[in-house]
Length: 434
Image 1: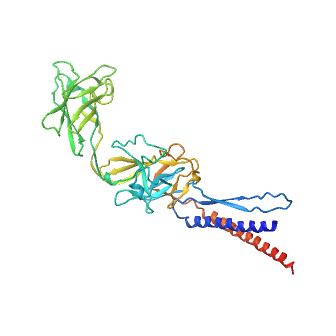
Image 2 (image 1 turned 90 degrees about the vertical axis):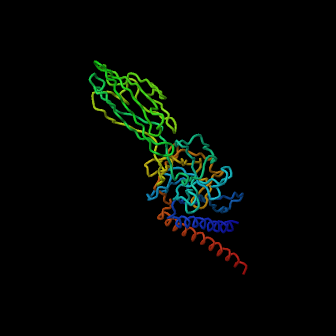
Image 3 (image 1 turned 30 degrees about the vertical axis):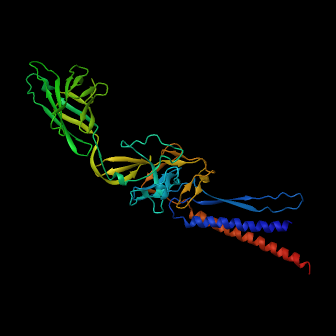
């Protein structure tokens, strides 16, 4: 009977608008929740197939979902560990038990933003109990080969183990000029000293001293120098490397290195222009210059001048802060000025973002509807970069929600009116019996 179907349709209308009211309530309540993704409903009609000419109301059904693909605006904060994805994608997190569980047993979740801080164990976590996950870097800051289809290589980000650090020197670049007139006849033959500070594997500052001694001929110019390398950390051996460097004085390449002969434990590679020496903490490369190249050591008619002397390595440093760049690299910054890469935070993506299962604390998990997870480097492929000192605002638009609230109220009232009208019509039918 069509009048009965009208009653059913009205009741279903009350139900689906109640569902819509629940999503609106959730959206308004979370309008100030960072990272909250707006809940939406999708109404769809139902049709009853009948053989008679009478029409039967099928009613309406509703499907609710989270608009996870939508991105909220980013707001600046004063904390380096407040992070958000600036665009598509979510970064990996886990719960408290997942910190110590095996990766294969850990609960892997995804979130668009989080205000993280180091807990008593040094793990970065949010107040709601989400722990940040990342790929650990080696001593050189490299990530290596990692699985991008699962979280098997992800670890809880921990900054406590990096409280102190020291990086030994492995390369020194010499950019200096030694005076050409010193190798001419009548020269004094005095040596020129160049002390260069370096750091050993314990973070102690040591000194390499390069002594440049010209060869003074009886007539003309020799353009030849003897270089002795001494290490303050080795008070027994004396010289740890000797070099004989000859420079050209022709019209096309005057003042450039013509040849280098290395002895006493040092070796020279003419292709790279590097002299290899061995210090107590390990091998060190010293760039002196390639043959007939203007970089490195030159011999020109100018005073002795160390114009560009550089080295890598760092002394003992105390951890001051951690920062995350747009590519997801979490770096420790020490009071010595040294920066060390600790982790890379990937950004996850799935084919159907809105198919992810919603969890507490603005977190989501992979489901059959979302498709398989892939972990991208931040700011590559379809995913956005990671912004530090920032949080993502809720995607709730209060004005839109209030407008939807008015529409829902009117729709609910109208469906209630249908139920009331059907009730009155049935009452009239009942009164026919009197």
